[in-house]
Length: 105
Image (cartoon, rainbow, N blue to C red; front, top):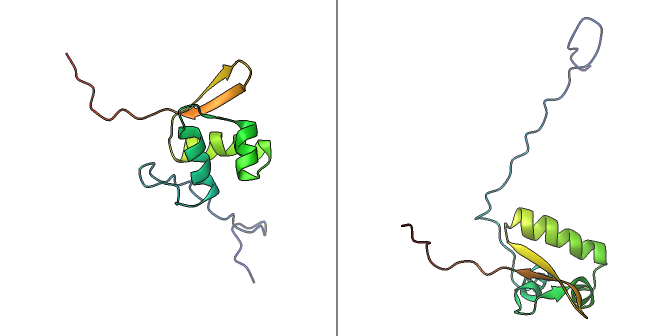
């Protein structure tokens, strides 16, 4: 018989689980995965549209958008930019990281 929390006969509530967020530096995409293919598409100089990513990955458009905003931006901490390009539509790119430290004056 389960333990009762109070005299009214109600069960004790389970403690709430804490949301532990992994460190961004430890998160990375594995080689040879569709996620890595998406990253490679977005790292190209000309970037990629949602339609191009859909064709390359075989995913639905909403899945590509979700991977860009959720996985790449939030979990991996990548800087993804987008711009509307004439005759091409909205193009997404991963911004290159600065290789050196910024000097202060």
